[in-house]
Length: 271
Ligand code: JAH
Image (tube, rainbow, N blue to C red; front, side, top):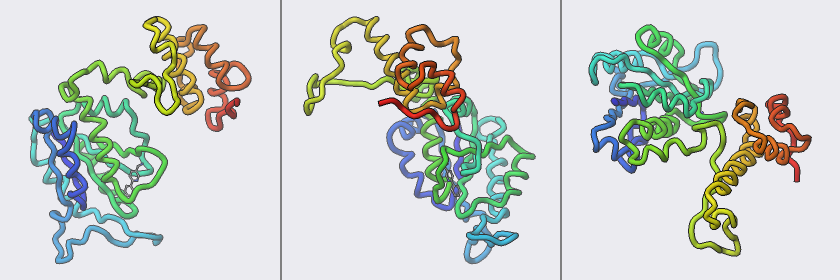
């Protein structure tokens, strides 16, 4: 997989040499190119921004350097001649999820465009979309100073799903956001630490009881912290015990129905 990142702050991407992404690069599974957008400026001051048409606060990234940058990257057909996908982080994008991480981990070539200021002239995405697939995405409902930190997060989420990057592929399926519930809490030695014990069942050796306890904890945590995820569950995936656990977490019994009805403002949590 080939990744190209266009930014006015190439130094932000030094951490990619470390840890898992760095290992994936060294193994030859992932190839990363970081490109300074100013390389495609032509004026003395290497200007990348300008004032917004229609007025308003802040500056906008001018289209010409972006157009030249994407033209040049598209001329390089590495690897093979796979059509690249352009990914643009923006607070007004659709949500980037684990599902997208899986889809994009199967791509041969991704190009990331890091905006700054109030964003990139909208014609850059319009024009790019005539030549490749473009996705504008957001990590969550908060505003950063630019797309760089979002790209670091997405590159990590995507590359760890590339086959061979993580040794134990099984550890990838038992994770939050892989099957619609949050993960259960985990414990290791010592059995008593700062007065806090480990749940008895985990020391019991009863594998059936342990599995059931872990599922109960996943359901409880998800209902309390992420009622939006409970509302998206398929009721056919819940057994009688699941329903009983959920009924005890939120007041009023049928938690799934309630969370589905009140997804925008979930019911208050019981003591
Ligand atoms: C801010 C360009 N949801 C994360 C996120 C992603 C991108 C940006 N902010 C937040 C951003 C300014 C300019 C992108």
